[in-house]
Amino acid sequence: MDTINKLIRQRDRTLGLAALSFLLWQGAQLAQDIVRDQGWSGEPQDLIIQITLLVGAVGWAVASFLFLLYASKVSRTKSQSVIQDELFCHNQRIAIRTGFMVLIGAISLLLAADLLIDFSATIAIRALLIIGIFTPLATFVLLGRGGDGDEEEAA
Image (cartoon, rainbow, N blue to C red; front, side):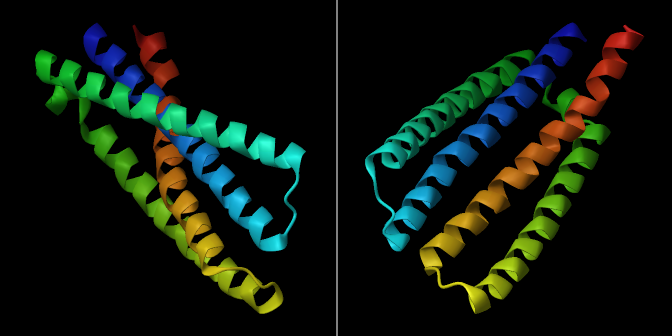
């Protein structure tokens, strides 16, 4: 069971890294779009945006590589059915439902904001992309953290 707990921790950490990296990477690209549309271009913020974009992109690539390592470990130990237990499926459903509700809320806010502020479709689509991917990943990781302390205390 120790191997299973290590694999679950690895999965959750990798998902956390993926969520944060995606937020940084795509958030920086969103910032680039906003700066370009508004004509706010300048050296300090451009450098900060570029560094954030680079850190996020590298983090996303590292998370993708770690997912490959995780998949090979799960295959070797033949533990997928144990890892994808009832709690996993429950948390996955909640994360997807939460992501969907937040995405619908964001669409509503963007429609309302469009009445007051002019922004390009690229900005709206990128914002929805960030919300649609980050929210379920972050929700799943947060739900998974709720059980970590209980398992360690029981052991």
